[in-house]
Image (tube, rainbow, N blue to C red):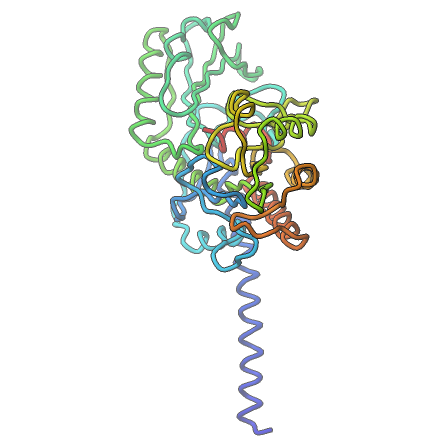
Length: 395
């Protein structure tokens, strides 16, 4: 072997080691920046502008007509590894293009200490990490009824009002019939959800509406900078877009036969599903009342008592909304078992969106995707199934 060959081999080894080291450093930087995007700094919130596509990632094995239209959706097929980027890989991609500026708007509401990433499940409170918060300090304590115009306002994004009776006391979610007087008020507008990010005109309208209400109390107003809040909303929306994952498992008659609606309803209800006014069956966890997964029609027609009585369908789709359920890996395992049992009862097959039968390897790939998404959500300080996750991935 010549010295030239030895040199080329050594150079190749060094190149491989260099690539591995670079990838390791990139992953560390991405994890740090995801955490920083949601961390609280100096009484405010820091979010970094990042570039991403306009579509939320919504991996699904179900045919596109079944899942409601979502302008941010990209489908996931476990049999095709050429187009899908797992959430952590997406974060690595956007991290390489993160701008240097940081947006740390002044926040009028001090976040309560000891707040977990899942949010407070027992007592709602302002969440300045995902909401634009405008603070009001009335000249004297006011009743919730004095905020009637704001409590009934509809601005295009979810709006919440909170009050507390004094500094350091717990916040209380305000409704028109809330009793008592409050010395401090917080108006909170969600910065992003599945309908998109809050725009500058929307945020301006929000601050203007709160300011007008404050003038009637009267109350001093503490509002953040609109440009900074707009940037925060866009950055938050891009992060959530890369973590918005839905998984579908299709139960299908592959021989051209149909499933009678009455038969499907009987099997679904025997499996614990309940028919809802939304045109689907929901599997609801009795202790918490939360929906773990749903069953939708394979065709575009919604399930209703009348249609199930009079028509048939080629199949149905189990749907898991990963960000909206606690412990999504465990729920996926439960959904997979339910889907296999239903397929056996209906003499049907479990298939992907290309009507290819799903084997154990495909289910393992899907389960790994659910796990990766769950970990990525937690890296972003969004606990799956928490009030914060339900807000960001609702709408």
